[in-house]
Figure 1 (cartoon, rainbow, N blue to C red):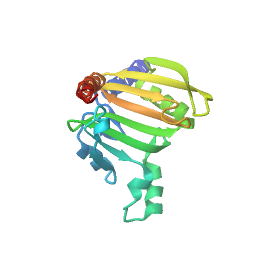
Figure 2: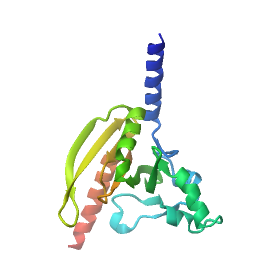
Figure 3: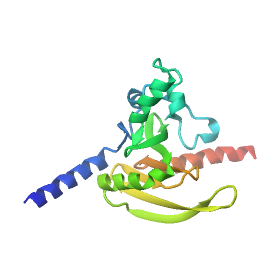
Figure 4: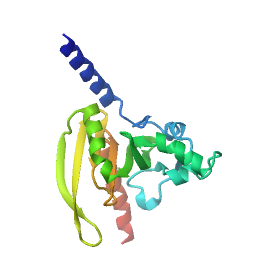
Length: 200
């Protein structure tokens, strides 16, 4: 009986997590006000024209910019932020939210590559085994190859992708993507591409 009850509770918890997907307390599909409510020192701005296929606007947090004007001073702010700006109890170097028509459709958190195993372990504990796991490699500017592991969770409210190496060799990334956003952004990019073709 206890085993059955524990399984039922786990299943219910997973279902709730899937239907209400959040990253650090900000729900996918919410507006920029929710991001600023969670992170008052965040910077939000319109997306430059060359990146319009990604979003209309974006909000981001990096420790130095977040604490630049904090009345407590840079050191005190950074110390406080280090305890709060974490993912799976690992330090986050930057956090981005991307908006289309004031809806959060994509969010990314960057961390040191060494955080990958603890992060994916926490994701598996919360959401179960990933739907896919792919191993490949990427090269740095010197041509040296580094192993990269990508895991993807397909959930009811969207997808979570964890890459052991992302924009930098020593940096991993977790991406939360709202359900339907991949197709929406692809259509958006295609439409913008047609406009750009007129300028050839």
